Amino acid sequence: MALAPSEILAARLRRVRGHVEAAGLDALIVTHLPNVFYLTNFTGTSAIVVLTADALYFITDFRYLAAVQAGLDTRIGCPGATLVAVDRSYDETLAGVLKDRGFARVGFEAERMTVARFNWLTAALGGDANAVSPGTARSGGAPVLAPTERVIEGERLRKDAHEIETLRTAAARLSQMAPAFLASLSVGETERQVAARLEWTIRQAGFDRPAFDTIVASGPNAGLPHARPTDRRLEAGDLVVLDFGGVHDGYCVDLTRTVSMGPPGPEARRIHQAVAEAQAAAIRAVRPGVAASAIDRQARDTLERHGLGEAFGHGTGHGLGIEVHEEPRITRRPPHDEVMDAGMVFTIEPGAYLPGFGGVRIEDDVLVRDDGCEVLTEVPRELVAAGGSRDGGHEPR
Image (tube, rainbow, N blue to C red):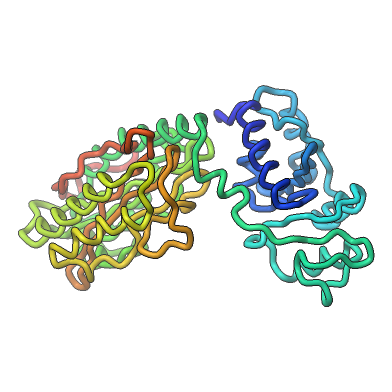
């Protein structure tokens, strides 16, 4: 697994420490595992990071201690990390780290901590969980727990050189495997069978795992944007939406294409052409300085001109990286209407869905560059006609 080199981790830590200092915090508790991975290269399932101006306390349990310790002095080790073994429980160990260092004000990831956990930690630190609002007062010398939002996510928004190289490699792998698979669909296969075969093919292409539960939606099911694969068999004349992706060295890529089982009819061609035009319009709009909502508007306006505005009810795209859905959100009214900047990576995936008939979605992954936009996934966008017999021998090989 090609993880980020130590110098990349050091640069990330410097930037995050700048935010911690600017917020007037002595330390930041990091519990969201994708953020832990971003800062430390840790790929396990349990860890907490406490980041200060000059230290990083890495809390983990017996399962990972030896591996983390062995990695600290390598070219991918986390700079300046101090390993702390879990004693009894993660939260008790965390409370011990915070009390022993005498911190006055400690940030936590507000979206990732439950009220119950906050109350327990406040009490463990010597505060009054019933009397102290987060971040507003200090009780009896206990550290104040101050809520933070998007401290690390804001840095993850713009990919660094290591991340861009990883995502380019992943997108190339997905692009290489997709065309042959799309052409291999057979009349008579069930959606579940296609999904299983597709996920096997993703692993065979060198991905660690699928990035999410694969979507295979045929015929009327294609009119449901996030349909789950069923036992419905592919039939001649169906439109089939396939939405799939893979995780490569910790980073996610995502692709959707729509296949016709046999020659597409006039309505299928009309809808597909409209969605293809909407996607192309949105991609043309991607460049530094453009708001996410303006990109979404290009796709939505195009579909409205084709009379399909009401058939497009979801956002035009979502960020990609360590998580398959992260910032920026390319929608009409995103929580944060990000202005595009070089290094952002996200999907462009308009669709049109007609109940009872089916639907079309076309999705690619794009990178914002100083001079515009780079499409990372290169798979033909034409409406592929597949549909051989189910006896055509498409078992994994």
